[in-house]
Amino acid sequence: MTIRRRDFLKVSAAATLSAGLPRLARSADSASVYDIEKFGNARILHITDTHAQLRPVYFREPSVNIGVGTMQGQPPHLVGKAFLERFGIRPDSADAYAFTCIEFEKAAGRFGKLGGFAHLKTLIDKLRSDAGQGRSLLLDGGDLWQGTGLANTVQGADMVEAANLLGIEAMTGHWEFTYGEKALRENLARFKGEFLAQNVFLTEEARFNDAKAFDPASGRVFQPSTIKEIGGHRVAVIGQAFPYVPIAHPKRFTPDWTFGIRDEELQKLVESLRNNDKVDAVILLSHNGMDVDLKLASRVSGIDVILGGHTHDAVPQPAAVNNAGGVTLVTNAGSNGKFLAVLDLDISKGKINDVRYRLLPVFSELLKPDPAMAALIDKVRAPHVAAYGEKLATADRLLYRRGNFSGTMDLLICDALRSELDAEIALSPGFRWGTTALAGQPLTMEDILTETAITYPATYVQKMTGAQIRDVLEDVCDNLFNADPYYQQGGDMVRVGGLTYACAPMESAGKRISEIKLHNGQALEAGKSYKVAGWASVNEQNGEPVWDVVAKHLRAGKPPNRQGAGVTLKGVDGNPGIAGLG
Image 1: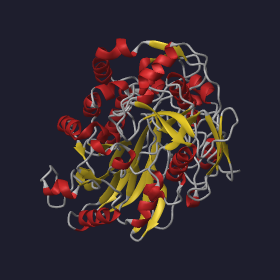
Image 2 (image 1 turned 120 degrees about the horizontal axis):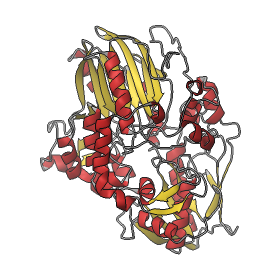
Image 3 (image 1 turned 30 degrees about the horizontal axis):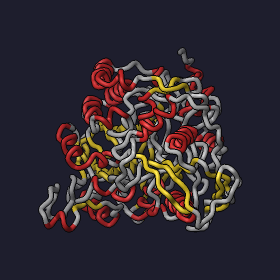
Image 4 (image 1 turned 90 degrees about the vertical axis):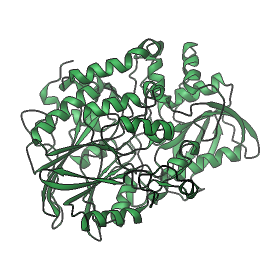
């Protein structure tokens, strides 16, 4: 595929903030897409939520990402044209393809796949070389080890090798915890960087039993922070792991640990780093999600920049948040290896004078793959290529996942659950990881694993009353649209098969879901029991792994279910977080 240089828009978006704040800019026009004007004396590179995608991918950004409360109409809750207008991106550009869902299939044919660790390696090495010896740092925001069949089979060991070769110097975690403590610690023993998590503590019982901890006195399980000498200055990096691990995932994976946002402990740590360790800059490497980070930034002072992840939001420019100590810049760097964030800092004694931030799409067609990383990827994949390469079907339409309410890939999974498990209704979790398949693309076992590979994949069939089904929808909806970000756990709405419903995101808890109907048009009855199939339950199940159920369905060659999203939205007309449900 040949890509012409004029197809790539380099947005220059310098913004002067209020008094004392640094200037922000995306890439300036230059001879190369990835030639960045030198600035400052420290460069921090940030990736997050790669979800074990070692090779380049297609990934369609959402057409629905609704903000509520104070976040309505604010980044990251902008999609489609509203996003382009906010950040000054040309509609037919490569950036429009990378950052939005607009004409995705057409643009995919034009610009190709993004990401891939061999291509990331080439870009990272270039940017580190440009910065100069001892002037750069590479950070990973978590969800590095999970998201493919290979990573699931080897419990993330492949990604540890890749991370070491890439040169990641510090990371935090989320899905990493779902491999359990033993596998987690084995991987960390092989990881050459540092694992940081200030917000993970031992339970009282585990402390009593002298469970392993980085700091037994405080009960902190992991190293909370590190100090790096960059460009002759002391830069502190604090890790913030996903706060809700035992709630969002089976507690059996982390029985001895408690999580949480823990902003009071974070404030104490920041003050200690500032006052006792005399650092010149403080960076929070966060897996909270952007809405949570924005609230956190207003409550905790002394943090210069939050490098955020978890919600997979690709936001080209940081948000500036005022707090008692000044201003904190909040970023979020997308997912699946599609983007590399570049934070250039001009640091002096005890403060940051100025900042440049760029979120660079990683166009694999423009970057030669690094030979050593390409060889490593081939090596770790080799034992599994034959099994994963089985062609199950051909994509009959664009198959994607990301979006607040539905995705065609999830509808396929729901169709398989209903068909293979003989259920009236299917429920599938609103995970945000999982790549996109273009219409006409062969669907292999590896593709299905990329949508389903977790450590608790067992399917289930159970009877649920109409009232219970409604409660599930309301509960997940409140997690997604609670006006207080601290009550949001990330992810999207549970996907449904065999049902339609109406949703009013702006309503209060318990009042958002209405008009629930079966696909035959009959209303769901509160007191009636229905046969429901699902997967990824936090309670232990003993059904077939979901990937086997979906594979069986595809092998059977049954006609695809062309059902739509099945959701009618209410009270959100004109919301810039909506560009269509399909």
